Length: 496
Ligand code: ADP
Image 1: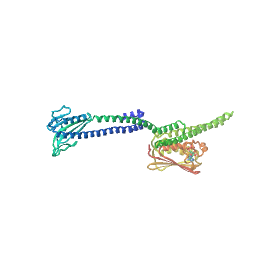
Image 2 (image 1 turned 120 degrees about the vertical axis):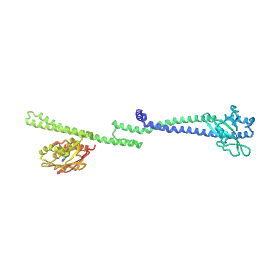
Image 3 (image 1 turned 45 degrees about the vertical axis):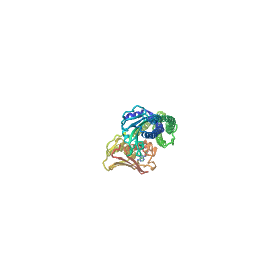
């Protein structure tokens, strides 16, 4: 049932429109009170009119009841004056009067239908006990009432009070007057009042409808302006922050949008910078290769040794190009979400040993000594390919940016939560002002030196991304001319 309603809700766009809700709300709030007012006023008019009619007629019937007793009418109904009085009353109120004596016999009926008959009903019996009654029969348009015809202690007759009449000790109910009075005139007045109220109501509904249409359109306008402003940015007409301050709500939406816009601009700027850096980095080896090839071609009868030397240089440039592309691919892979992580339990000591084993030949070439010290055996949940890349990059840098007869020391330690690897070297060091930048893509402290020793400027960016994917951190501290220390800290248990 609920899902059906939800489906319907989504199928009919109007059911999700704020404009429609405001319109309906205003319409309902405007129309309902006028309907309640009309019905309420008519109802209280009816109650009041019926009450008045009841008390009016009761007073008159009480007077007639007195006349009845004084003229002994219950025993002898021949009194012309009384009969005329009764006829006049029933004509005046378009009603009927029935007089019942203490034997429950009808002595007079202005309709002449029930005369002589016996009439016993609950109301009549109660009335003989002194309790008169009134009943409004709305459906048939009549007020029915019973009035006791009773004697007073002074010998004179009196009638009971309207609804609950308690017979006093001296009084004695001699008969009952049963009267019904038409309320047609009340109904007719109500009909006229209702018609007039309806006309006013219809005029009001038309006005409220117009006001609701107008207001609902005006009230949602700021939201249309928000959409328009965002569309303008989307279509590229502007990339300036937008403003729709009409409501606090629209201001919040716009503020959030402007923040997103700023973020996207930053991303776009860094993407553009990255693309231009990539093109530049990829073009450099190509330019070298072209220069080498051109100079070979320009020389006729160039010696074989020169050919071999130039071809070796070209091969080196190809190798460099290949390295940049591989590093870029690694970086792109790291940029993806943690879903691509291939986590397993890894022996960190073993992993570092194997990294150092592969790098020792390069270290030997540069006459750099590599030492590994492990405080304790460490096993952690890691993506071993990515972590291998982290330590390879850091140790390779420590070897590359070292001095002759230098050293590189790798220290592994762990506590109950993290393991830390410190890679320190006796190298050229990094100026403090560059600490924040060295992890950026293509950033190099000394561009020509880095290129000379085969750097792509992507190693530390890859390293940082890989460490962050493990929810770890990498920090650098260095003394220029004396050496550098990179500290990697990674949780032993992988946090998803
Ligand atoms: P590259 O491929 O140029 O080595 P990286 O991203 O690995 O690029 O390093 C960025 C820069 O940080 C390097 O160009 C270098 O200037 C500096 N750097 C990195 N590691 C060290 C280190 N151990 N000693 C001195 N400088 C370093």
